[in-house]
Length: 429
Image (cartoon, rainbow, N blue to C red; front, top):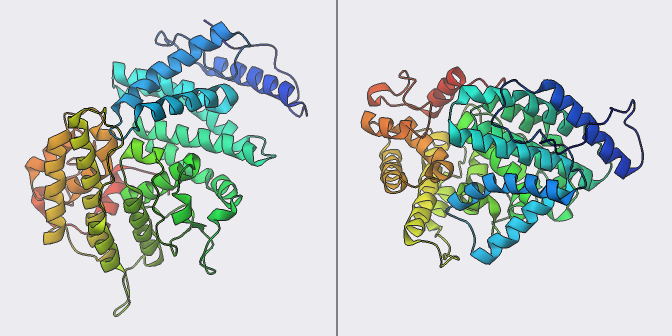
């Protein structure tokens, strides 16, 4: 069933009328995608997207398909808010799909990808999505950026595309898109005076204020930038001003619902990432290293009260386990990435054992992989036990495959892990 217009492509794209411009983009996109569709796409009920035909029956079918796939993702989240808030979020999600061509495209592609992953989990088959990703990438990078809203649309879309690539094992392309959208992120962030740096010597945004909801695109970029830096050992894409202390708030943070990483833990991860950027060869003898403050803050943090009393008790347990997993991931990164100890350091091994136990508690939960990927990766790097490494292998595809750095429980330092990552995963940087 074709849900989008495929009229003849106009010869120019500089029409000043927004309604006509939307129609032009829709026609061009549909033509481009139809020209690059792979063969044997019996999986797909609809052709790929770019704008709604003004027929509520057809639009409704498309929205229902997108929601049917993303709803399953929502239901897996340990950290989802209470039911009334979830209904509000669903409404906002649908509104974003309707109001934005680009977001509609990426959501539709995401729905198709999620469906494919659930049906066969064969990552080789996901190559058929590549032409669509490439088309949407180019649109995000060349989108007409006249106003602030014009910037937010390609930023939101590119973050979704990068996320979809990460979960489908196309990390290199996802990270490349994230890098290219970093200037757009800075334009959006700097348009908000509350995010301007408090430290006169800093050129970055105020991290404490940026993490205060609701700033979905801002928070999402910060998370992806810093987790990429942590797990891949790459420099941060933008600078963050961490001079202002964390701002405590009871407002819900959608990024925490998705990834389970508490804001305070993320704040400390950013500090370590920036310290490592400024000290690529480690600190000089006698130089002050603020690791004790980060360690103290990590142990002082306590999980907030549970807001959804309708959630099953097993999910409450899993929720706390995930948050504890992130605490210990932070501690491993602190000791190895900032203090320079080996994986055999007793403090590191204590956190490895804790993550192993926590993972055993919640690994039967379907969403544990989404929430615990980074903590389990760090534990897999540092464990002295091949039994634990095998246990983590189902979740972290590369752990245990490279037997050079940590084979047979040999000690490793953080640079060993980064060198191994460069061999296993080429990011092109």
